[in-house]
Image (tube, rainbow, N blue to C red; front, side, top):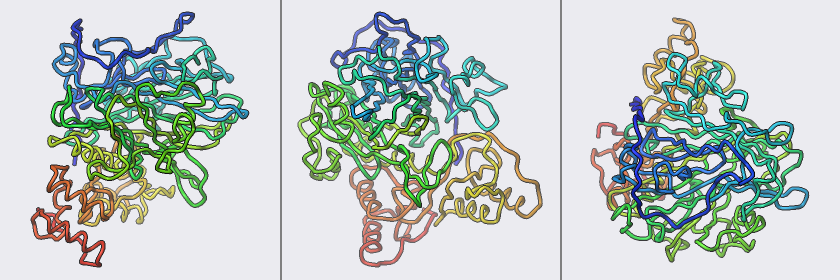
Length: 583
C-alpha cells in the first residue's frame, strides 16, 4: 500500500456575511482588557476531510477570529474553504475543545482550563515564569513538502528557540502531511480568571503539535492528532495530577446529542440521539477522542512510549476517567473541575455505576449504562493521576476522529471505533520521525542483524504476519514497508551491499495486519471479530480490510458461516481461521 498525497492549496477565502444557525452563545477567548497578546486564532489544519482551527492558547475547534463567520470552527466533511465561506458545506461535529491540567499543590487544588475562555498565555516559560509577549509566539504551519529545497515561511522561521521540534537531521520536523506547532503556558496569574479555574498557576509549559494525514481511503483521512509535551517549569510538585481533554461537541444540531466511552479503546465520543439531525440529516456521524499514549507512570517490567522512544520501567496511562456534563451543570469552580477530571460528578460524588467512567455501554448493541435524555452535552476524558515533579516532563498523544456510516447513527459509532482501532495500531507500530532507516527493527540498539531481518519478513509476508515494535524497515523511502525492503535488507545482512543511509520518511509507515479471522484488524483473533462481522453483514458496518480476513472458514465467501466458525474456534476449540487471501 502506498500513500497518495494530495496537497490542498488554499488560493482564496471568500468571506461571507450571511448568518446561519449556530450553537448557543458562549464566552470567548480574547485577551484581558489590560493585555495585548499575540493571540493566534486564524490558523487551521485542513489537509484531509476535516478542517479545524488551532490556537496558541490551548483552545481548538472554534473559529474565535470569526474568519468564516460561524463561531464553531470544525468542519466535516471538508472539501474546500470556499464552500464553507459561501455556506454550502458547513456541517460541524465539534463546537469547542481544550486541554485542562489539574492537581494538588501544597494541599490545595489548582487547575488550568481551556474552555470557552482560556487561562493559558502564548509562549514558553523562562526562569519559572512567563515571558513578555512576542509576535513570534504564534501557530506555525508546515506541509509535507516543506523542505530545505521548497521551504515556506514557517519552515524558514522555525522557532527552535521556543522548543519547536526538529528531526534527527536538524530540520523542522513535519509530522504527517500537515502539522501545526505552538507553545503556551499557564504561568501568568492574570490569565486565571475562568469560573471553572481561577487558581494560582501550576507552572506548566505545553508544546502542542497538531498534525494530520491525507491517505486516500484510510482511516487517518478522518482524523486529527494532538500531541502534547508538558513541562513542569515551576517550583512546586503537583500531586495527583490529571491531564484532561474537555469538549463541547455540538454534533450538527446541539440539542440532540448523547455521549459515551469505550474503555478498551481509551475512547470517549458523542453521537446523535436519532437519525434526524439538522445539519447531517438521516445518517449523522459520531466524533470521538482516544488517548493513544497517556502520561507515564512507573511500572517495573513494562515499557512506555515517550516522544519517539521506549522507556523501560514505565507504562503509558490511557483514558482513566470520563464524565458528562449538560448545559447548566458545568463546573462552577476549581474544586468542581478537579472532581470532574477524576471521574466523579462535579460535587465529587461517585458515578452511579461504581466506576470512574460514565456510560461505558455500547449503544449499537443496546447495552445497559448508556446515555439518555439527549441534549446539549459537554464531555471530559482525562488521564491520571501521576506525580509531576519540578523539572519533569510528560508526553500525551490524542487522536480526534469522525466516523460516519451511510446507514444510521449507531453504525457511525462502529465506524468510529473501527477507525480508532486502525489509527491506534498504526501509530503504536510506527516510528514518527525522519531519518529512520538505521535497520534497528527490534529496537535493541544494533542495526541490520538477522533478528531484524526475520522481524521485517514477518511484518510483510501476508497471512499470519506480525509487526515488530518499533520497526524501521522503510529502506527505499517509499513510505511503506513491503517485499522490496525485505530484499534490500537481505542484501545488507548478506554483505552484498553497505547499510542503507538514513532516509527521511513519511508518517506513518504503512503496514497491513494480515491475520486470518482478524476481521477488525486488532492484531489478534477474539470475540470482537465475530461482533464486527455481524455488524458488517447485517448493520452496514465497515468491511474487513482486506476483505479476506473476514473469510474465517476460507471458502472464498463472506457470510454468517464465518461468524459461526470464529465462535466455534474461540469458545469450542474448533478449527483455526483459514488463510485464503484470494477472495
